[in-house]
Image (cartoon, rainbow, N blue to C red; front, side):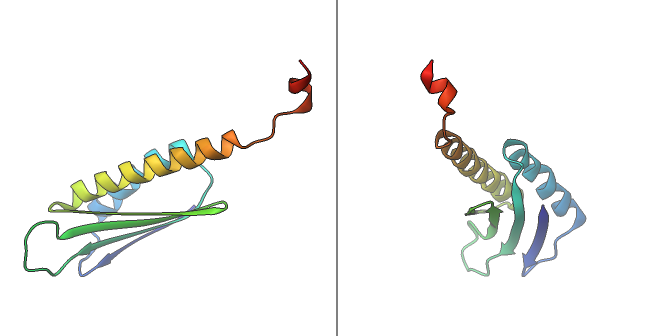
Length: 110
């Protein structure tokens, strides 16, 4: 799995990098066939103070791309919300692929 963590209008500190990696471990625990993960952390330059911290992620799976983004006042809260969204989408994709797998003929005959 290729993991890319980048920042827009900010520096990605080692603490942020390790926090994102630890949170993404939850997604890889549910689905280990990830090809690449691109995370973009940014600070929006808006006049309003609310929801300026933004976290986006692109997951490239075998046969599907998953995208999620979240905004919050705190970047760590945005990352937590982002991982929750990604985890739900990955579990849904995993359930969908398992539901469409073919049933062997020997099980149908019984």
